[in-house]
Length: 359
Ligand code: FBP
Image (cartoon, rainbow, N blue to C red):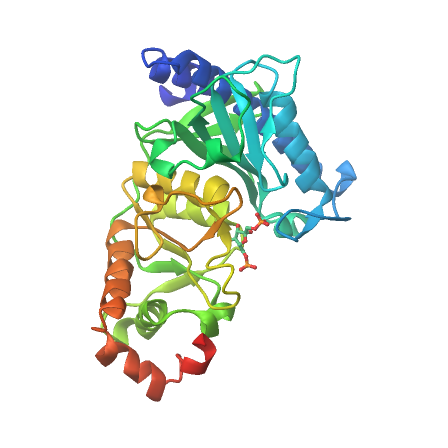
């Protein structure tokens, strides 16, 4: 089979050889691929690997760290720092930016990553993933936090790996989104899903409805319409999914369409969203846009948001283009006060939106 013969290495070398800095980026992505193979091998052992369970430590977000959060973070560093292509790294598990330590050679790229997204699922044997984003480092000095604070449109590569029944690496270098399946027997990622396209329409949505009382009216309006299905304004039934692993949600959307929301909520005013901009939202937004989908905060294109801090959180709405555009319209209606006829029934008849919950 033709596609079975294109390895990740061949693909990135062919895609990037003619672009400035392309060989370095290709070499870095091959190292990222190697780290993903190592993580995949580790995760497959499950309980037998002796690495499951929680640690006493917390990460910078105050979340309890799993042993595997730390091990997988170290794995990415070990595989990617030595090659001379990276200037520094930032990760969910590291409070500060880490410049590539001497005597290793320092390169011109920055890698931001979440080594084990959905790690709450790891003990349950449910799919988890690694998310990564590559930016350029434009100066000779070791990188600092400010060097990472670039909007997602400046990413030169982004992607994720999903560790499920098979391990799949999904990658974009700005020319479409492509999926590679790990062939464990030969140890290579093989191009199996070239030019992924997200269907523009969908009847599937993913959101954690236990947060409903904290949502804003535009999200309440959208979800209420989906739930009303064929009996409501959408005139057709919708289906809901929630895996609690963003990688698994995004992967499903790439395979068959859908919309994923972790929207702004009022739980904690200091945290307008749950997901981290630099190493979760931005790379997924690039993957989704390059596959013909759309990624938004509800009020602006995710890829244009300029990060203010390394671990900034952001509302995320992404997936099938027509649905995300619709949800953006609902935010616009709300901000212009044009949605009262739609949200007032939510106040009155169905009690979905309680103003006191928004205070
Ligand atoms: P971690 O990176 O800490 O695992 O958290 C991110 C995440 O797992 C996302 O993948 C997912 O969308 C979300 O948290 C699920 O959170 P919850 O189900 O608690 O709302």
